[in-house]
Amino acid sequence: MPVLDVFLFAFMTAVATGLGALPFLFVESPSRTWLGISNALAAGLMGAASAGLIYEGFNYGVLRVALGFVAGVAFIAVSHRYLEGRKGLRVGRLRGADALAALMMVGVMTLHSFTEGVGVGVSFGGGEALGVFITIAIAVHNIPEGLAISLVLVPRGESVWRAAGWSVFSSLPQPLLAVPAYLFVETFEPFLPVGLGFAAGAMIWMVLAELIPEALDDTSSETVALTASLAIIGMLVFQVLLR
Image (cartoon, rainbow, N blue to C red):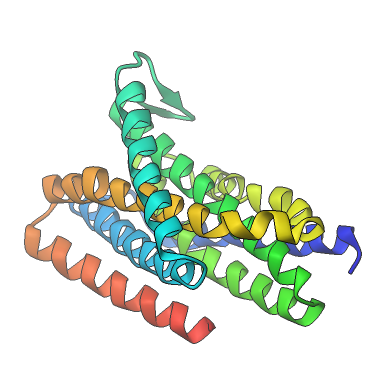
């Protein structure tokens, strides 16, 4: 398959991520309760996505997934501690703690996109039909990931279109990594489970250290538990239906 076609298919998955921001075109200015629900919903979506990454990685190697997971948790924890001490942190219109939350969310999702890019490239190495199927599955899967990013950005004051832009930006590693992974399948494939574990560890840290605590600050624990639980089961069912 032509390399340009692989790139364009992978670029389609990045563009699809921006669609996750579109529901916010119909949402008015959020209250604190809505902010808490948004964080809980994002936490559920990311938690379920992490479970899917770990499950997928186990098909390649349990130990490598576990090592990648630990590395992901350590990396994002150190990054958060470093950024937390930076004065005057800004992301678009956001400042301070809101900017930190936005930066961490976009950063975590960007790390996750590296493994998806490798997955697209490796799948095309197995044939055009498999590559197209995996690409479509990842593109559809990216929409709720864009929603998770927007759930953090928009309630904190970022515009819908900028949230969509950040969502697309977070997925740009997919077309960038898909081409080399396609050209050098045997080189990239052994690193795939490590990358899946790394992304899962980073997302789980974000869920437990940032999203859930912030959600509990803004709304009741019952609301957080119900929202996160529904998001988890919905995302898991969604992932199973894509297989």
